[in-house]
Amino acid sequence: AYTSNQGSAWSVYLANADGTNPVAVYSRRKGGGVGRVDFVPGSGPAGGQLVFQPTLGSISVLTYTAGTGGIKVTNIRALVTEQSLLLTSVDVSPDGLYVLYKVGNGDNTSTLKVIPIGGGPVANISTGYFVEAVWSRDMAPNPRIAVSIGFGGNAGLPRIETITLNSDFSFLSTSGPIYAPCTDCTSIAIEFARTEDDILFSVAGGASSGSMGNIPAIGGAVVPYNGVSGFSPCFNANDTRMYYKNGSSVLYALDLATQLSTTVSVGSVNVFDVRP
Image: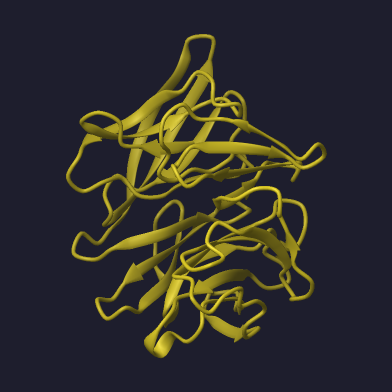
């Protein structure tokens, strides 16, 4: 799934893993943009669900079917609406039951929140200089998330940390910095691996802009991807292919066994997710 602003509209597309047969499942005219997209785990070949931002101040759940007649949207349900605030970093938990998102506060800080995917009470996790937040690959014995923290002022150096939550998603503890890749970058994009307890990352801004790698969630040695340069890396379901954008927002897939990259998208891609 990916978003693209081609022509006069922002659209959300579903496509095959190699980028073929893209179908626009949601479109709106330019003006506010379309935000993040994230598959709900459990989505199968016959259809599934996608959490996305129809505006930068709202989150919705899109249900679709896929068959010989093509992809059809069967329902779009509003989940969160905070039109006066910027919602970003939307991520669905690995059990498909909760949505983690970030709400900007207007002072360069943001608050991390969790809501059941079916709707219900919202839990506040923490407020800080967060750039992105993603769920770990499991929810036991305690839910965990990884966060990237911004730059400058009270934020300190850009870095990656993990946060352990209580069962009600309130803050329990933090790992502290497990990796600080740069002193001059502006942001760090992160994503958890699907089968290992590793965090994928890419760096934007500064001398190391476009560098990518992964690091164990408990900290340790970084595995760099020296042969490619890009942003927003994301693994496929079994961690054998890594999808990423280049500097021109073209989507690529890197086969980790052969270290060969192939082009996935024809046009530019804003944000994307690979079905788990």
